[in-house]
Image (cartoon, rainbow, N blue to C red):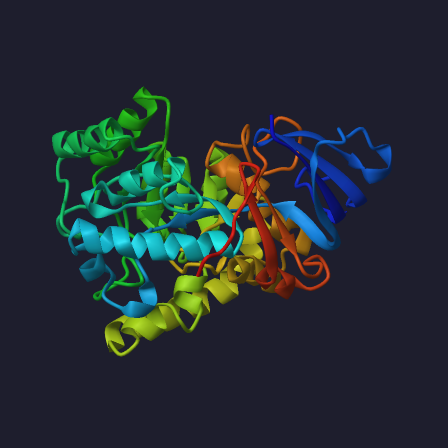
Length: 392
């Protein structure tokens, strides 16, 4: 039985309670067994001590939307997805190591070709390669003429059902469907749907049938509303969402997954495909709309969490952007931890530092409640009670 006693200078446990100074977290065989003041003691003499008395300790970050093999700053994201499985797996190995080193201990992958995400997830779980705990979608369901179409497409109710079932048979944790247009592809950025009501419903039904859920790429407007009304449980991006769209998300208790870095950070789409006027125009437009609307949306009561959308290692930027849009630092940290776990339906396992949960935590040099740049100074990452040693 492996026991670790983690001494924390400041503990943000993600439960919404008060900060605990000079805290002690005890981990037994990868799970948290007790949390409390260090003065309470009660640790076996044989326990290994991890001294973090000079650091801020919080749950590991949860990236609710990414793609393991992509790097937007390299451009041509669909071209990257069309590579063979070996180049994609090698890229994913590099990218996921970076995510883990930056404090992301759980990540939801929202579509890969060749089922690379399934294989990489299994390799991480087997200890073959380092990386966050992965929740995977398999191949994203995209219409032949829709955004997100790389090597495969699914058209018509029967084809959508077949695609969803194949993903689930191969071990997908959820179903991903591309509903509206996107920022990173040329052409207009429509808010209508590439799929019919019946096609979206088929994806939702197949997910529901096996006890999981469907997530929809949707930026706003009629396409977003159609996806929500047909039963998807998370809306990915929502950059063009209107007040009416947000009201519908609140009414149906659907999660909004914010993804800011890919179009707001200079190393994202701007670096990769910014030389293409049609795409850069969409990036600038999305920046203007989001800056105007998201402070209001995030204060509306909508449930939200964050993802980097393949901007590996940039969860700090996502949470910092929430704060720039008026979210309190404490709520931004919750969006990156507990709320992310709730959106991904894994809050019984991770997202907070509580007895019974997996021992996923990070230590920061600095207090992000006072200075959000402290999130960029991760000095320790623990996943399942094991301290990650960055070999890069």
